[in-house]
Length: 452
Image (cartoon, rainbow, N blue to C red):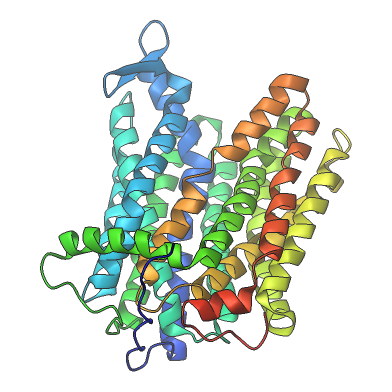
């Protein structure tokens, strides 16, 4: 039995159309927020917050937060996990609110500046103030996820079905370029700053990400324009209306099983992608014996090659279709894991080459997945559905690390652990191949693009 769903509302005037300036403004929000992902989450905050926690630990090496006690080295991981759990609860509601609000831009500004402000607040993360650091990161990461939901919901409004792959790919490309550029600048400062100044450099690098995020957010706020949503606006409190609308959407999604099946496929293979990225450094250091002189330049290279990869796969999608291109990228990810299993110990060149391959498939596979999902959303529901899409990214990121950890525990081999992740790409490939994309797109009332 399926829910009773009426036909999607007609698009408002200008829906799916935009100027070049508006699209560039949309790209620049990816440029702005990616500084948080690279400089804060990936590079600097984990080690720095851990050092602050160790300063404030008791005689047993424990820290205390929210009535719990645990080892100082676990603080960053636990804070990240808590933020992910809260995002699972928050992001779908954020999406529903954004769809019913009179202005998406206002909500984008609210979440972006809250996140950037909390990131800049890390300037006060000194001495033993680990509780302050955990709280600020929690707020920043929640605001980051919420802003991404609002940002993604603009995509169907600024590009029609035949342009969306290219627009999404260019957005991802801008993000990798912007995030990589700031990380490069901060790494240069680290290299020339001297060992004795590493803590201060890390702290100000965190602040630089907040300033970058806030500063470049100005461009999308100036150049994007709000459109009347086909779903209409909230009649009362936008918050209450957002909760009500979310409940309706969750019931409604039963009528779109192919959209749900695509979301399940994305959940599986994206978890594999996120785990490969998260565990690549551990694999490089523990299994292959590399230190930061190899690992950090390789991370930077991946960032910049992901820019090129997003653009390249976007062009391939224009020729072959996004669905086929994503399937091809999953074959590429499978080959990368097989190659990683056979990488020789201590030889940097093969490791760097494999990092380059990761960069090429990384940006494109994520950008085109976002574009494909945008085709499977009923008009006027962009924020709500992208809220669910985002938690498919954030909310399941424990599956891959769990499998990686279990494989290592059982075998004592990081090589077995890394090759175990191949299951995510094989299962994801099979599930994605089973989605009849043209029928799925038509089922939600949208027009399939010329190439899939």
